[in-house]
Image (cartoon, rainbow, N blue to C red; front, side, top):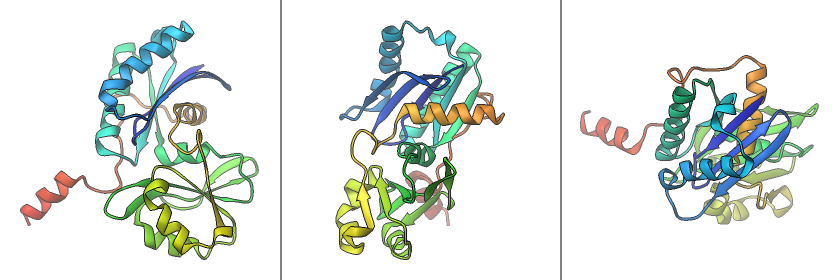
Length: 235
């Protein structure tokens, strides 16, 4: 089974093709261009490099959120368009699960992906690898960074931070937590990866969690700025 993984939930755009347990190709860009400019050319280059026609893809896995409103919509629209045009099923993979899966080999450590949600908030959830399986310990949350760090101060396990929120909130993390309590995950595993989305998608397919393109929708955790302004205006 070949699965195409797509993640455009943040600043990074990443696509990958995974065949069972084998990564066939991955293409990631994190450089000053919008996903609408890069995503389809990335898919074309990847397919050309591997001699794989998109018709050979069995399932399309896409990061379902949380994340950038625009980024998620670009990824969702692309995945839904491909699924419709190729008559393929889809599977949505939570973005934070994909980030945590980048370091799923970590044992006896708390995995804490943080994505910048603006307004001093992060999208986050906590994970730990138990019995060789990545387990999510909390709900997906949009939470003030200060509140998250207060919670993490109570943890005994060392904390692994990754995601674009690290760059934004590194100073406050360093000033709040003892240096012995955490560490940063460095490139290439500190940002979204299409291969993680595809691999987790494979697991969800095995659990029977396929979707038709008409049923898929990303989730955002909180209203967009436009929705908040509309609600405020019409109170």
